[in-house]
Image (cartoon, rainbow, N blue to C red):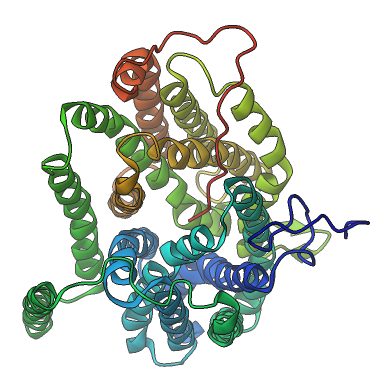
Length: 517
């Protein structure tokens, strides 16, 4: 706790503090609800693939290794993709606060559906979790932006919430992971559901704290538009029902086909969304030029998150099957290794915040830093290729190999997440910022969908070669972006802006820390 409380600002937030006590009640509510939501998410993520691959007589789904790994990539892709319609629901129908509460409630139901012994509920549970995350995640950020009146205090508050996210990511695999692996899978999912239930009740009861802010949509639909939306939504729903019913009747609705269907949607959605935005009559030639240049960042983000998705899929299975986790007679649960990345992020975040601030100016800044994150991730998979080669056959390797890889992924995430989110704000006019953030999530969803397809290569090629191919892909794209950094920076620059190096001593712009997936 701080020894002396700073004077509150006009919006009730302190000027600077690392304690929750001086912050207003509404901020503490959003902080704690997000902490519980992330606890549930990371706890579920830590055991989902292990549960999917576990045999039926051990309470698992009994999926093949590649199907289980692809399931995680498809699910995370679907959840990211639904963040854009989740923002639309708040903006046009319900308002951010009510959409946030709805998302929290749907997520709670999804966690508890996973916790039931009814295996046929698993696909429905995962859909509910993806829908809940899509409703919750963008509107939590929207409420923060609406409640804070001052940019500096907003950034300080978001930084504090980011710390809470990492605390959840660190502790939830230790608790939910241990209970799921060593006691019962359902108990692990129930812990995540209980955490989310606490967060849901907390944010639902806190309505008076927000004083009506976020209760109404910012751009409500008129009657004619609402009717069109209902017709189109009904038509899409009918097509999906017919498609799924036909697949089920023909025996084609399997885990593999469901994953493939989600993967296909995550590929099509960002392409369509980008094309629609690019053709918008509200954009002028300079806007389209910046949007074309930013496609490098979108595609780099897709590749990066498809590689990071390996942490919860192929790398988790490698930890289970190919690492010697015995420490003084105690076998470390596989899920505990998932706590490594958030621990590294907590330790390294101040260092990378200083580095990004120090090197935020200069020609080619955004693409250069983005390429650095990709190159770092590429090197990590070179290390994984070596580890997989050493672990061939019945030989097991030290988990230190994975810890080094997770360390490099944490460094890459601290660069890519921060730079990508910060750069979005300067591409198009401010009224498009929510749309651009939604597109960034959609391209992250494309990464999840691509990752669910890539991981199937483990069935047809040696695991070491699989990681080597990922390394070559990341190093090639990162290298190409590094070589074209000046051209991309010129494309991103405002009309008439000078993209040369700033004079010595010029204060660079700040960048905002990114949220984890």
